[in-house]
Image 1 (cartoon, helix red, strand yellow):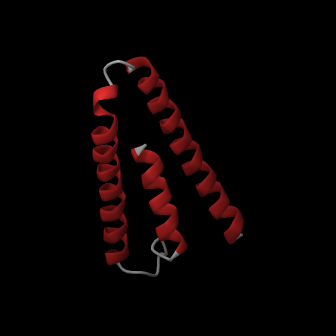
Image 2 (cartoon, helix red, strand yellow; image 1 turned 120 degrees about the horizontal axis):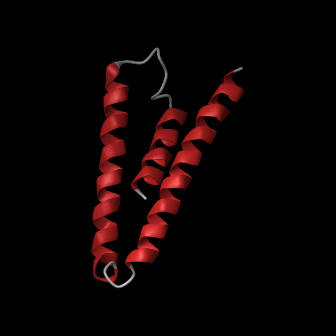
Length: 88
């Protein structure tokens, strides 16, 4: 879940120009801060709402975590390849 949120924030920030090489280091710092902040907040909120349910359904949550991780990896790859196609 953290990876998925982080990827979405990265895509959003790249859309507004944070990933441009011509911009300053402040943009990169801002992107790093927001990526980590959303990942941490997502983990805290998920634990708050589902914390008591984690013990009884451990195998299901492990499967969900693996699927979310795979989804985040695929989205990162699609974004990286899509960015090359758009800028060519």
